Length: 150
Image 1 (cartoon, rainbow, N blue to C red):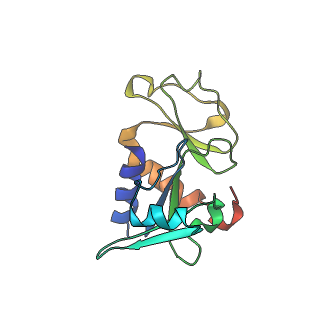
Image 2 (cartoon, rainbow, N blue to C red):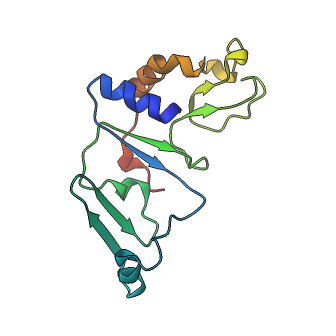
């Protein structure tokens, strides 16, 4: 929900936006599909060029700073990758005081019932209703993706 709302807000402001979702699981090709057979034959990457979309599947983990190599987006929003030093919003189901915050947190996002809680180091505490404020933080404090080889 948060990423989708931020994409909509940043697009409304005229920015180009890409997203990355880190996953614990690999999304495998459907067995017996053309791309699955091509991978089984030894292809290191496959691409599916549809009439409206392009899907590129690499069979190795690509560093984050290379995922969109050659593409130019104003912002790349990343979901997951908790162990990296990427600037981040920290979502928690507890109050901000109880949240254990990693390095690089630009704002803590809490449920409405915790909206008045305080985070350490004067980090802003916001809710999903504060998408505009979150987008303002992204505009002001984003960093070049080239800095992150995750």
